[in-house]
Length: 435
Image (cartoon, rainbow, N blue to C red; front, side, top):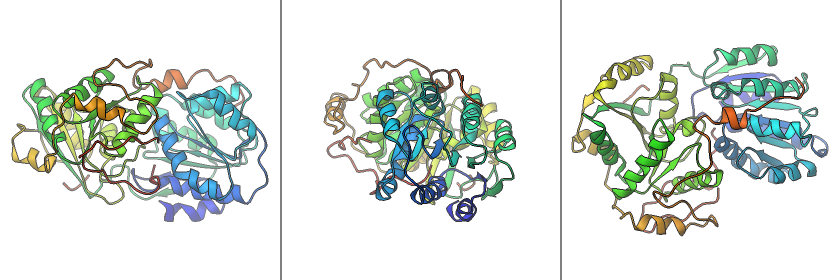
């Protein structure tokens, strides 16, 4: 994506980019933005010169982490702006003046309405994961924010698909764009192996997921509801597999600690709702497991895109029930896979192969103490402890997407300490550059 996009972006063109996940979009837009900002004049209070809009808090932080070392080297200032964090600190940063804002639509809308941020000096605007923003109901907020930026500014839109609401954004806000499509919307990742396994009942389904997650590598388990995330993480922890939930009902600090702990190998398993299905990059996820089929083929593909990124190998496993066979076959056909769910038990060879070498089990009593040893400066929630922080998955639509009262496959960061004796997850010296 970087090689295909940079020449046109640097030439000042509006660019419409389509690519599968893990293709390097962050630096494809980040490097040209920083090049332009570095060559410009001083920044004014409350008037940033560049804007990156993303759908989720986690992606806002990830993009900020990837670009912050570069902005610091260029003596530029960047402000991540998203909900669940101190708005007063964000207002203070904007008053001091920042060159680049990386924001979710809801929190930026709030800041604009408070006159804490003015978009009249924006020279470059990026919409990252545009289709996901539309799926979450952010289209009105995005339109209002774009209306508040100069129509003469350069605009870049990156999306996995270019249909429905995305077409509206392109038509109304990207005049004469250059299309950069490095793959088709239905293309499969050649290093991703997909499997469909079937359990006879719910208890056997959870046992099968536990067996798959019991290996020494990092596993991301997707579930449908917040309650499922809490219950499955609790079940895995009771079985001696260090696991943590991630969903929109958790306080932002707990969400950040969960993701950082999974990234560093402190938790071997992250049990997530679809809040983690798009944009999030964690090095070394070996296995993605779906506890039941996702809502649609688009979500199925994006969930699987958390593994086998940037040329690495990975596996994607549906674990379903007999009553779900029809939906599973439809999902597989929609992504071009001719397969059917296979009845499977935890001791079958395919499960042992996918799980990999077994990791030592940890007693449930050990897990809370290990979590408290983290270096984040705060204690993560104990296993089974109630979690607060209102909202349900997709709460971005309501809590961050409020009123807008201004202007117009083919083949088959605080960081907690790693649990003593646990294998280290692959990490990189700098934040991953992909979105």
